[in-house]
Length: 279
Image 1 (tube, rainbow, N blue to C red):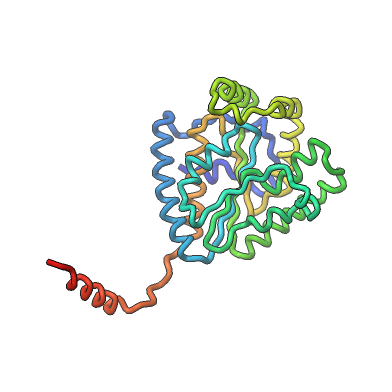
Image 2: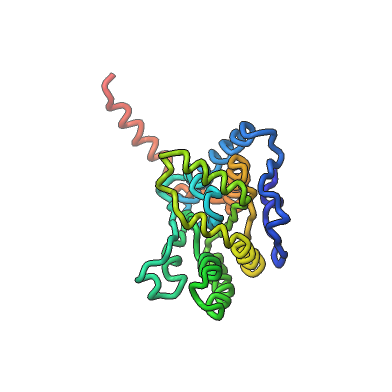
């Protein structure tokens, strides 16, 4: 498989979401094959992330953006949640608090970026400040239109400081979104997710599409590439993201620290302790 080249947006490329099929199945014959592939990927992700954690030199930031019900939570749970929580944390960015609004729009984001050796997963992100604020007219155009370059500088600074950045847009169709809303209604265990705004925002579907397309054009650079992941089939979404994360960690090539003790001395101490055990 090579989901990286399939789904990565090339720098300076123009993207029309209507031209990208959200229900792709890729090379898989069905969900069973895709899930087996994802399991292989997540196992290697765990091993690589362990090395990244103990190496303590590189950070990884994973940004997830999507319409409601596209599966950010499911992706985190099934794929990214397999990482060791010692070195991985998820940050959900909801409506900013009063305190957060009293600072610049990146203030609440910056302290959530990963330390060296750690992974940060953003469930929504700093891109809300050129998406929802634009479509819902929360700030003037003169304000949000300047944020693209600020975001680019922010991400380039993270890259220069040792953080690798992956940005995923989970591409779901309007029909599939409504189908998932119906399943939420039918499942009492998911009633807590119900929100009238999920339906009213559908009236601005095209406006959000346009806002995302501007993001893909203006904030897609080699230091922080965007990947558009077909997400109507959850199993395909998981497989594609899993391989891209696995490949990225491979490229980061984290190494366990060099041995700084005398192994013969340690073996001698170990054998002494073994000899003390009752026989």
